Image (tube, rainbow, N blue to C red; front, side):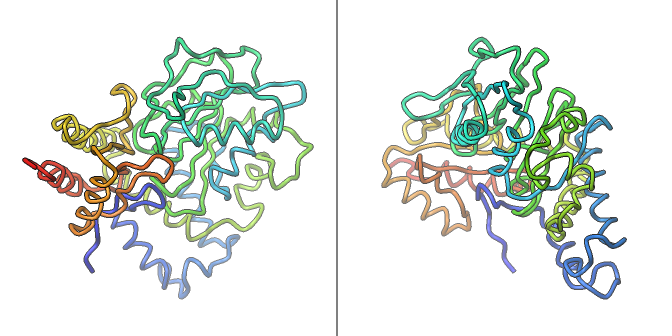
Length: 361
């Protein structure tokens, strides 16, 4: 089978080794005579997979025992609501830093639950060309938490620093850049991430939450939405997406085998530099709408001189086996999502194509 070069933004490419392992797990898991999908989520066979996945997250991100690691469902969009439902108490307010469409959606869900405020925004003329500077942050020292989105898949921007929230718990949506680089988890109160970009398939959401925040969370909401419920039952309060977690385990094992996140980060920087270099080398053909200091290492966005030329670029690239390069419907243009599983050879072929496209025309 010939695999294409997959630049989709999510669900996205997964490591071939993780998929091949899942292929075997699907039919007969480790000689058990049944698929991992068929095993009880409360049985010993699945429990070993579940716990291994949690331990791999702890190992790769160096998560201390001060934090719970949970597998939930509903994607990041459910976390937009669960975070304020759990952490925003009566009489409290929360700060949101707006750097893209997803942080705006998180803000909207926060408003539906309680009192929230915009602590800073990089929006300009309906677009988000950069990450806000520290000097722009207007943080409330009494806020219940500060919420950021670390990587913006639509705008193509990324936080390359962790903002100092002066002791206020920092909440981060890391759906599109978790496990792409080393991380000081101790700087965060809670991290959440939909799995379908760097971690595994859609349907699994990873939540890493400080234990004291979980225990102090509200109790006047349904148990299924309380972090303490999920943490107390090791994410087994209800039936989890067992095969998705198994595949996530496989992906994390690949990252460990590659030497951990320090080496993953080096490779990700190299891949991004190659594409941005091709963009900057031909300003008459390509333009990146993102400030250089805010450029994402996961989602490289750029434009050609006309929408018609962009459509031709996408069509010609697909003929060469490159899929998923069309920009988000809200902004158009081109977007190359180059998560951990995007192979260096794909980026080399994309850059070669970019260098030759309409050259001399």
